[in-house]
Image 1 (cartoon, rainbow, N blue to C red):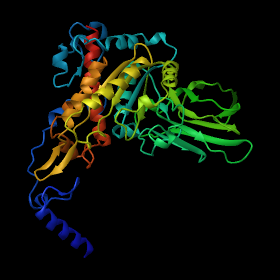
Image 2 (cartoon, one colour):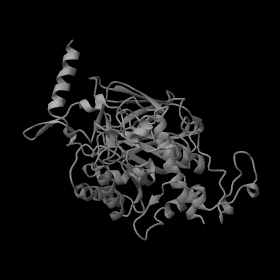
Image 3 (tube, one colour):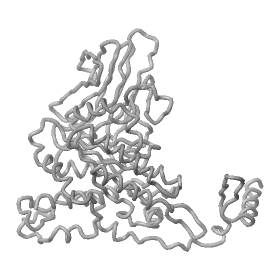
Image 4 (cartoon, rainbow, N blue to C red):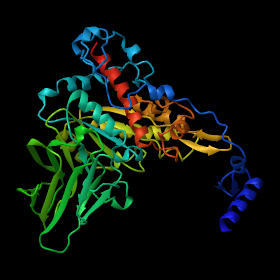
Length: 473
């Protein structure tokens, strides 16, 4: 009866005040009776061609042979020799792929990075790519498929950089078992404004003493066996930590004991294994442990791709972090590229003009580029987001403005831009993702499902591959 009374009350109010009830400067929204009495008549984008343009099973670029690129021709998955493969231009092979965009006259921005990839055999550690984003990439969504593509095509293994205390249990790749005396401290929590540095992930793990002279804190990492094979093993583990009052002891896999000293800056403990490992067990013993910024599980060489979500961020929080510390870790970890994927947290704040966001975002981009000479940044634009209306689900009215502000900032800072909004279908495309069978987006019409995130990553990788092949002609 209570529920029925609420429904009747909302129906009466929506009759009297359709579209919302304004009281002073406040606008109260509620379900509109017109959405109850009418079927969904909105026309949504047909995304079948977009879905069909990617290989949703796995990456298979080996079957491509481009004109003028005989030196990189490979035998395809069926075992056909290169001379039997069809010849095609880049535009033909990647028709329908939404490309990367560049500032005017700078369409070779990615070429130095591609050359570094081609010369990775000269490195004694992986080339590193950091994927920053908001909740859209949490749990290794999107990042996992990009990592799989990079490591299959250029070598490498391992999940990459992991925070000690995860933000949640949503990971589709790795599971973490830690002792309860670790606390997560994040740059996004305003009460942590006095913390000097948060490492590259924007958060750290702080030890909470148990009262004993020497307490033991545990960190155990183990892969889920539902993800890509290349992340299930690693041959290198590197722990990054901050200053501490006293030295501390680390016991690795319950067999190897190591005494660690601390400095005034970021330090690391690095272990290389002769045989691939599929789990890591660390026990840290001390009366005052340092802050831990995270641990990287990698291969000896190849590419490492790190998933670094900042839930709630709009991409404007890097200036609140210790830039000297971040620059130091970028150099220690051989970071060559950043992928920045933000914008969803700006959409609910509808304003007429987003120049303020472009100005603040370009400042963030310039700060990041200054941390390490030659750093490449690819900005991924905001995806389509929908809200309910009497006519059905429609794109937020400000999505294009936010996208344009991001592109403007990227070009002003000398960065590459990839338009996810257009790549996924443009206006009113998100409902098609959410209503797909199986669903490719969640029913909040903002976030992709695991399957949808995989397709988004595949679209990104096709745009990447197109530029990589273009650089080699």
